[in-house]
Structures are given as structure tokens and as C-alpha cells.
Amino acid sequence: MEEASTSVAGWAWLPADVLGLILEKLIPISDYIRFTAVCKHWKSAALHHKQHRLVKSRPNQLPMLMVPTKDSSNKGRSLYSVTRGKTYGFELHVPYSKRCCGSSHGWLACVDENLVVTLLNPFTGRTISLPPVPASASRARAFFRCDYYINKVVLSANPSLFPNDYEAVVIYDGYGKRIAHIKSGDEAWTCIDQVIGFDDVIYYKGQFLAVSLDGSVFSINVSSDQTAKPHVSVVVPMSPGTDNKTYLAQSSRGDLLLIRKFQRLTYCKRFVKSLSFKFFKFEKLEFEQVNGYDRFTETLSFKVFKLFSSYEDRPQWVEVESIGNDALFLGTNQSMCVSASHFQGCRPNSIYFADDCVDVACHKPKGPHDMGVFDIENKSMGRHYCLDRSQKHMPPAIWILPTMV
Image 1 (tube, rainbow, N blue to C red):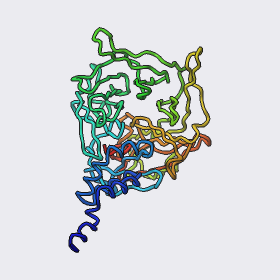
Image 2 (image 1 turned 90 degrees about the vertical axis):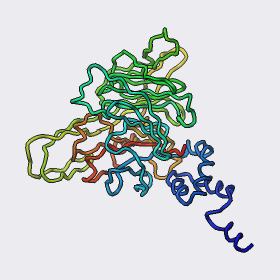
Image 3 (image 1 turned 60 degrees about the vertical axis):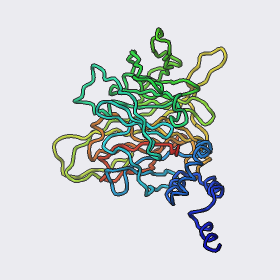
Image 4 (image 1 turned 45 degrees about the horizontal axis):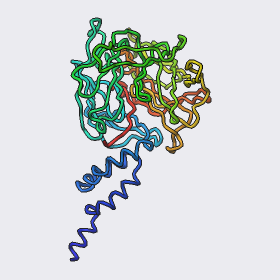
């Protein structure tokens, strides 16, 4: 009896209901991952708990930045928390040689040389292969790597929860000139012939919306009716501006936001020695110069617009000076918005951004990666994660919303 009692009292054999109570208290995904690593029994309890975990975690998870590992390993990537200012020690097994061309509902989108898109949940290891994205006749392989040919992939829902009822949209053809749609079970992407040029796409209130280079918003119309031609139609026009990138996001209150990013393209001489680069503020560089230039993009500021509409008037964008307690996370990922009050250390009324430049030349070795945090009220720029010299040649960092489902 004493031996049995000792066995039951052991940490490895805590009853499932007790483990469930522990799991209820674990909010950060990093704690959850550590829990599953204790032993097989704890991992099994976590898997049984995962459905409830997802429902609980959706409003309580903060996007994390997927970055190079501390030892710059080429076998995986780590996670960085902007609120804790630390990189976690565990390693995610993610294809390392290429840029991830999407992050949506906790799934990454990767693409191979044949333009086959693979969805990957790096926390569970599950993968889903989608059909190849069509290669346009104008595609110049000499100028576009496959992972830069596709700008962004966005999902309507988590494929694990809705395996037969999720959709995806891809912005592709180099600088986002084309767009295509697919539903789970389809054998091929449905291409939309209109060549407009898109910056971002969002699944909003049951439909996909895409924003063009000039800030106009289009609905993506794809019907199961074979006689209806797939097309996009203008929902909200916007006057052309001088911004360099435009995003769509849904606020924590459900409002549709349009965010315009202003950048500049900077050229600098290549140097034999490593550059001493200071984000957002340039120091004088006095190293030996060699022939040739490196170029990189630098984000200067953002403007945020909110969609207003009334019963009689046409919807229109109105610039706002504040997004209240919200914080935006922008990049190659599906644009995300969270309430900063739920996360200690998260800056309200701010925009966290990661590098999403589709110009391969901007990601050559020693080229800085454009990342930071923008305070909307003060219109000031700051940092969150900084690459060291050994990591500058690695794939750009990307935001991901952790999920164990």
C-alpha cells in the first residue's frame, strides 16, 4: 500500500482532473509547451485539454516573434516575447532556408520551388499541402525567388478546427499584382484575372477583403457557381497617397482599420568590416569601402484610418489619432490586433511591426531587417527585437499567434 501511495503521489501520476486545473492556470503558450515536455502522462493530459485550451487562449494569447535561435542554428527557430523582452530556449522545427510567406491562426505558410504552399503548425508539427500557386507568364525566375514570389497567404479559420470549411487567399506575382483563392478540398487555386496590385488581405465578417496599393478596399468574390466569374469589386475607395505599404486589421471592438506605412529606401556602401548599425538613427560609418551598394528599407511612420459608415452615406476612411488600448502586429503575418490591457508590458496605442519587404536585394547578408514599435500618440519609433550581426543574413522574423490545436 505504501508503494502504491508513493506512486500515486508522484508528479508524473497526478490525476487528470488535477492536471486540468493546472492547465487552466497556464496562459502563456511557453508555459504550456513546458508542461507537455514533463512526461508522456502530462503531454497526454494536455492533448485532451487542447480543445478547451483554444477557446480559452484566443483572447489571451499575444502574438510572438519567430526569430533565429540563440546559436543561429539553421535547423529551427525560436520565439521572442515583446512583453518579456526574452527569447525562449525551445526550438521550433521550421524550414529554415526560406522566408515564411504567411502566418494565420497559428499556421505558417511555406512555399517550395514548384510554388506548392505548405501550411505548418510549428507547435504541433502538423502540415497541410495546398496545390501549387499558378506561375504567371510574366514571372521572371531570375529576379524572384519562390519565397518572395508569394507575398502573403491568409486563412479564414484554423484548419484543425474547420478541416472541411476553411478558405485561403494568396497575394502573389512578385509585388502583389495578382490574387487567388482556394477552399478546403479544392484541387486548384481560383485565380482572379484583374491585375490591380494588392498589399494585404483580411477575412472580415464572413468575407475576404483586400487592400490595393493606393488604399482602396475590394471584396473578393468567388462563387461555387461555375457561370459566375471570380472577381474583385470596390468596397471603399481611397485617394492615392504617398505611403509604401497598406494593411487591414480588425480592432478589438470589431472595427475595420486601414494602416498606411511610410518608408524610405536607403543605399549605403558595402564595407569589408561589419557595419555598426543603429535602428532608426544613423551613426557615421567610417569603415573601409569597397565597390557596390547595399540597399534596405527603413520605416519612418504610420497613419491609421477607421471605417465609418451611416445608413445614407457611403462608407469612408477617417484618420484617427488613437486606437485606444489596442496594439497592432503587422508584417508578413495576417494583421492582428489585441487589447494591450490583457498583457502586462504590451504598449497600448502602438504598432509592432516586422520586416515584410518583398525585395530580395533588401535581405542580403549584413542588410538590416526593418523591425520596431511605433507609438501612435507621440509618433515616435522604438525597438522590440534586434538581430545581431550573425543573424542579419537569416530569413526575416515573422509574427505568429501560438496555438496547440
